[in-house]
Image (cartoon, rainbow, N blue to C red):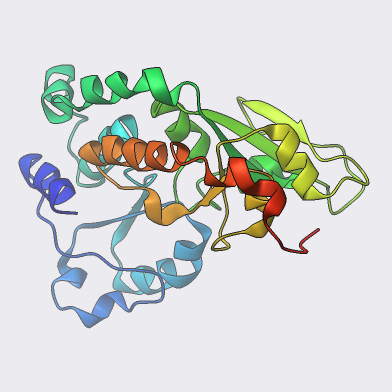
Length: 251
């Protein structure tokens, strides 16, 4: 977080404090004095934070969370806009980005060969991959910036509706009507698959490695750190090699 606060300070914006969903913003004296609150467009924040902020009478600006180089620069522009400042000019953006775009590009030779699965309900794909649902960030855009290949696995729809691909859809794999999700994931042939379930056996039995949001690092240097973390998982072929020997009864 320190790097993000340095960027905010360099933009001439004073930082009053951070809050989390369901935390009372009025509990810290400095927060009600803020001229604006920057809030991620995450549904959990809508429910747990915005009602409390609205009671303070402070202006709210919704900005996607600062993940990835471009995402962090866009977030900083959102912070500047919240207090009436113009976006950073191209020279300032290049200075803020520093050497990190080149360092990230140097990893693309390896990341470009890696497939990362995102499993979503087929009838809710666009919503499930939106910042509103996915922790305030766009996972497809982030993976692409890291040089990884996003594979959207469309799980069997809950209702009798045609699958709706997400906007700017990446590669899609649709679960068959009577196909267990493990088999669908095998067909997707991913190196990694996002899952909120630790050690998800449906993923490991398909020969992929599960990961979750905790591996994502915010900020501009965080983009390179995230790419390196995900690559480190990809380089360990344990689940690909021993998938057939792994147990678990999840359908």
